[in-house]
Length: 116
Image 1 (cartoon, helix red, strand yellow):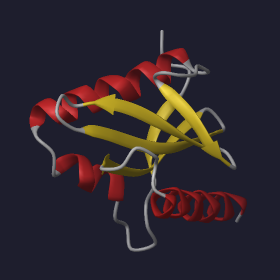
Image 2 (cartoon, rainbow, N blue to C red):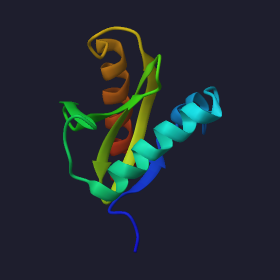
Image 3 (tube, helix red, strand yellow):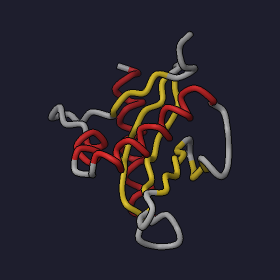
Image 4 (spheres, rainbow, N blue to C red):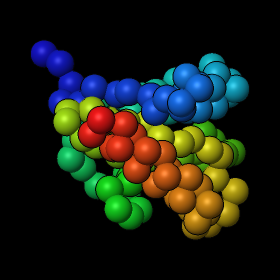
């Protein structure tokens, strides 16, 4: 049996994977928590709060509690894939608009590349 969605990292034109790079900057325990949350979404999609929340225009967030910190992984879903667009440590009550805009930009870029 396999998950409903395959997780894939958004890749820049230069070949970088920003979410993978961000994850590697975290501690092993933090990566484990976030990875478990991503896997849960892969297997249980579609689902809602409190694990995930829709932000806008097809971009969603996975909510991970790291104890003293809160992490978010912004993603989109297309063609059986969970596209990991952006990850960050949340410092304010609301998800910052700049982080959402970055994920939206990457999502649009990804869709455009798939249409080629």
